[in-house]
Length: 362
Image 1 (tube, rainbow, N blue to C red):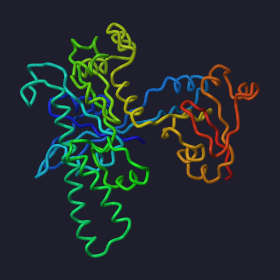
Image 2: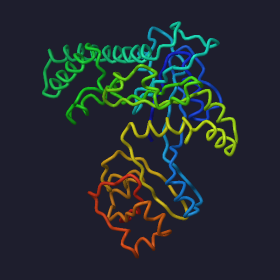
Image 3: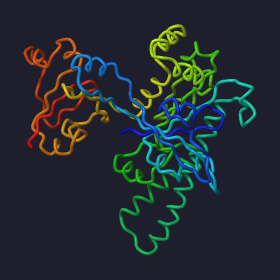
Image 4: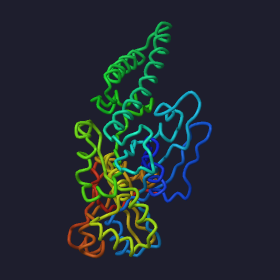
């Protein structure tokens, strides 16, 4: 399952967004120490909807994203540094920074003014400083250990962390570093916050909803968006709350009146999914139609392991058909007759939208 951690300053709508995304009934309660509330969102996918309508299975299982919201912070640590104490944030695949663009005198901004560009940069600086503290503490321990006896791996780790420290001291997040695969693996265990892909969720004022496509410029963050592994998605949490309180038919009509093709919540979930470079393949049948999440460029034998490790170990062949061909023909048998259902081996790279049946030894 993909995991994302929501961050943001007070009065941004972060916790409201978490509740809407995960259908949580209560907001996280602040306590004596940093903690997280975790919820799961289904990834909207029209392809799965259409496949489900075709097969009419007993179960429909969409891909999911797990979201975590900070529930409180206390003690000596605060801000982004407090997130280091929370496993749900250390283990997150990406960070979602909820940024306030809405104007509401009844909800004062802690800094006194609404300035999204300032908030984006301030949060980035907090995350960078939190990581810098981790790097410096590890380098101190390494220095002591190296005096007792050096190993090649310890030297390589030290060199990598010195490079990380230099970037952080320059105010650059670790996601901006171009790392060799072995170096990426070497620092993965540190779970650096600034190394995670970043999605800026721009919480618009209701009056700016029709200008949502111009939200990055409205926020004044064009330069920031040029950074690596950084994207933005606009929403209006106030409108999303109203939509969530309507039945489906009324919600669709309300969205149509506003000129919205899909809800902001769906855009946030989909953008989180896309940010991480994940795709979906499908398994179909009378029992279940299901979407499976895998990283882009995953080989078939590894994709089989997402279903069950036994299928990966006993992999023989993958029966593959494009979802659009299956939907057009109406059945797997018809696709086979027209040569659209093909057999692929272990090294086949699974494509987004593939429908696969794995043949395997039991």
